Length: 129
Image (tube, rainbow, N blue to C red; front, side, top):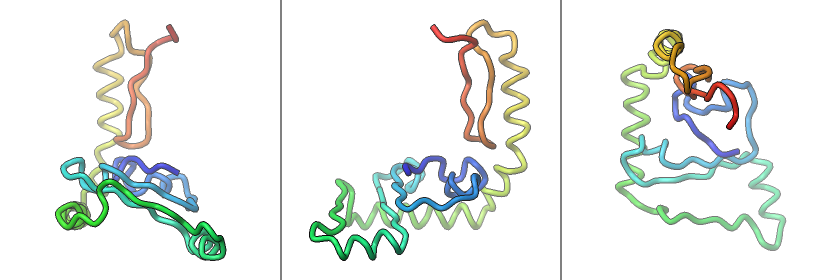
């Protein structure tokens, strides 16, 4: 599963909103709040154990790996999310965002709807081209 959102659903991981846990998760720019280049891969215990049995093992690597500044940026971002209770704010403010988008764009000829999960929102065209 590719991760997106980093808090926009009111949970840090988008999959938490749907109530399941992926076997593999990839995080990119959301981990560093879009401010610093960092990426990560999370694997559950089964994937890690199975990869050690395989002759090829779990080969992985990133362009941004082993970067101390990126890691510090990610740690600071997560600390601020917790300290400032940003995920709780997302949960409380999201209904206003959707209502405001729908009301403000309802008469626009190129907008069909605004929908999503909390503040992870998309604005759609009224019909396919």
